[in-house]
Image: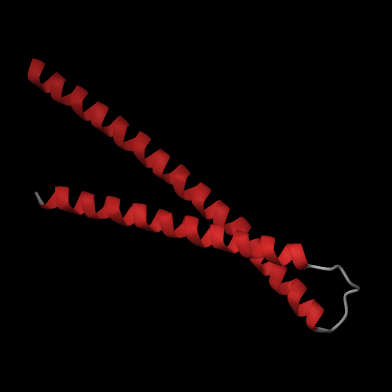
Length: 101
């Protein structure tokens, strides 16, 4: 019973964390899109324009890293699922083998 509750709690945590990642990455992407609509290229010098350009580059990098984080989490969950399936299959084969002996 305790194992079942911990699995349910972990599943809820995973879903919440994934939705948070989607929301933050999507919001950052929307902010980048909004800023790029009003962005006017100028000569780079030490001015507020440089700060705006650096902030935009940081936001774009955070969107890229956000997507990479989501991609890595999905790949890790897929690998975990495959590993668990393999372990369960092997466990059922070992259980069947012991029943035959």
